[in-house]
Image: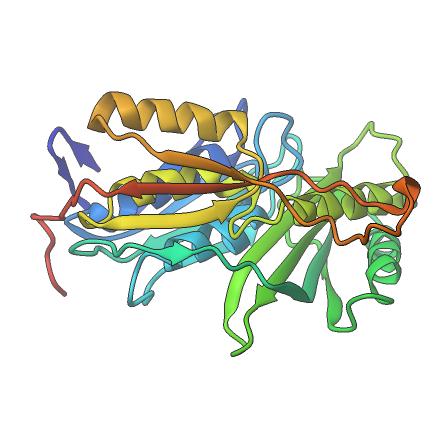
Length: 312
């Protein structure tokens, strides 16, 4: 698939068996960075762990937030797809299909308005366990947000997995929009219970609510999981200024900024913005909600172009 100097891409019929030591998101994340610059449109299938891995986040997060991050940089998102054909948890082997269009170049972005969360969607999944367990998780999550966000709905998915997978969990996605109804930011979290874990569905639901609320509190256009992908794409844009607001920089994002400086001699401008905590002077200290500082990232792209792109 890769020859030094050329990213061939194309349709690959062989299913790639990934290492069980890492989740599928570990392999999909670099494909989101390299896929747009292939000679032919990239289409392939990967087999491995989709949910509940100790080291890597779930594929559901890349499907919701990762694809949405890439869409910000491209004009036409035809053939950009990430489908979970079957889930894999524990020793199970899940299967995903990834497709990415080949582009001539990617555009710059200027997105610093976040907006309010207006919609929440969730997917409660169960693999070889009673589906009521996933339903109980969804009830806890839905009841926690129904008072504040009316447009929230959680779907159920049962036994969309291989025979060796066992467990249950929930992936939660929140979206913000501007005054014209255009989607701006996406927040995604996921948690799962595997065999041997004694976490109850109610406890898992509370964990997801806490993680989701924390992610919303970062007030970034892109959630913390996709910050490295965002920085890599900003570096490859046209030779013009790109700027975006994110939450607190993660360790992976900081490492990506250092790598971009080494390989492209590119330095990002990082400005920390204090959040308005939404409290008046008359409010007591106990009533104030301390939000973390937002971070504004800006850079001039290197103007990378896909010179071997083949139209079809």
